[in-house]
Image (cartoon, rainbow, N blue to C red):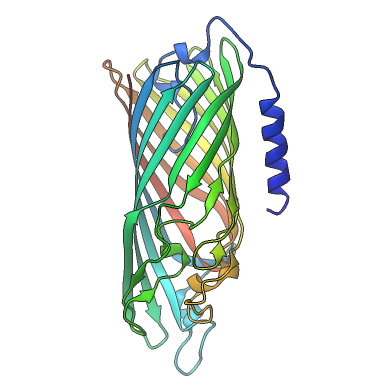
Length: 339
């Protein structure tokens, strides 16, 4: 991940230096169910000058069990027993995370579309203690706010390429607390916090293709942390590479299949209020990893322009700096309306 920043900056510099290619029939004029990417892909399409779009997405991510590398490890193996102690005193067993995302896009010109996204996050984590006791912690509230622009690089009758430039504002809390068996109002570990605590750069590039009944696309997107949070740490940088293929069954309904590879780094610095020897989620060197997901989705376009979409993703492989909670599934449901 240390080589990610110069690579992304090179891509951005190249993209901004390219002339916008004009055409007489750009891809936004083709309006079928598959004109948009699967609902989990953010910043996939631009809008014509003066056009607005509102969106809402609900995402449920389920985590159950942990891995060291690609190997599963049980919570009991992680904590051990009173007579045979394991690596940590406490181990997480399960973590469902719900995210509500409200988005707004505006076509500043035919080349540039502005966008913003606001999040509400809800987390719950179940734990096992070495003595056999179990407990749960919760956190919920506003997440980080994302602002950005989509800038056309090239466009033809059946394809489009645009640059994704954005910034994530640290509006999500990094001071979430809850009661644990060891302490009342304890600082919650890193995965239970609602935001990064840092201003993050969100560069990327997106390609879209469209035929008579098929559409396809690819996106490279990164998250680059700057500075550190008020608690003295910065989350690891992230890189996501996505590709998808969709087929229109009619003008209203399309089905899609996709692959997404993600790679993320460990945490720099640390929150001094967290004990890294207590639980794996408080250890800054057990937060990195990579994952390859496969997904299936559907888009439905109503005659009045409302669009409903769903996508379900399962990991094909994941390798984690662990023990670390693994991802079991990701469900995304969304609504979009342009006007």
